[in-house]
Amino acid sequence: MMRKPRFKLSPESTAVYHCISRIVAGEFLLASNPVKETLRKMMRRQAAFCGVRIITYSLMSNHFHILVRIPPQPDLSDRDLLERVQAFYGVRAPETLQIAQIIAEGGSLREQERTRLLKRMNDVSVFMKELKQRFSVWFNRKHERFGTLWAERFRSILVEDTTSVVRTVAAYIDLNPVRAGLVEDPLNYRFCGYGEAAAGNSLAINGIEVFEGSEGGDWRRVVGKYRETLFSKCPATDTLALERIRGFWRAKGKLSPCEALRLRIRYFTDGAVLGSRSFVEAMFQKHRDRFSSGRKTGARTLKGLPFKELRTLRALRVSAVE
Image 1 (tube, helix red, strand yellow):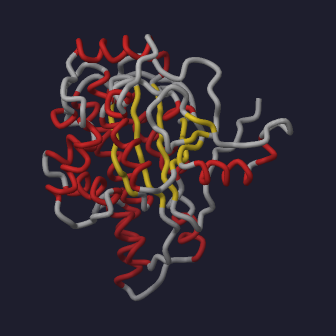
Image 2 (spheres, one colour):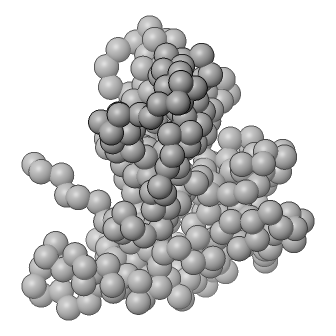
Image 3 (tube, helix red, strand yellow):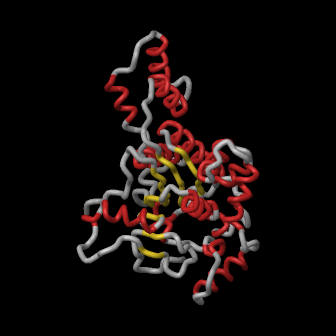
């Protein structure tokens, strides 16, 4: 069966994607902190090489989420390429030394080599593919195992690049350890973007500042705004509170956005495209040939959920909330 292409914006446009990948058979192979730390470091190096901006992420025991912004590919000089290769492979790697020597001698990279490198950059599919492959090689060697590590190709949701939409999806991702009952506040989970930012990591801080429209701005103001999304009208997040929220949902009660974000919302992982009505409709028209002739519109509401301005492209046939 042929795989359907992902919903993507053109390479000339900046695009945001929520990417999810799961371990084969749901095994908890990412459970230990050293394993998560290795994946986190690889993720950061891969992003630096590919020119990808990590907005936030959450590394769990059997899956991970990454929210990334993919900018159009800039006009990179040989020195720019050297910086990216060095960040990825290391200062003493043969690939780094080869390019450094060419530049030191006043030469320039062959066009074939430049093209080979550039094809690996500013593309969400390449970023995720290489990250998963590199981590698989490391994990299998480390644990003397063989075979596939990942259950499937990664899933991706195209997210409208506006502050309100990105903030909502980012909060959903950072709240993963809360939903799993690991912590009551993602501030205390070291393997999510918000927890890493709270610990002072400049890259993680920058990821949150950017979608709040305050890059290099006042971190206290930015984080205060973000915490309103995470905790407004939802101060209690212990196990009993989570069960109450789930029970309230099953009873068709009216939840606040903060409470709803404590639930596993499949629209955020399986909805294909997420954003305003106009954004989703535009993507529907662009990919009209992928839908039946009987479907007249693209945008679908998030049924029963308190996100009135959000629409999704895919109408889910089974329960949208777990």
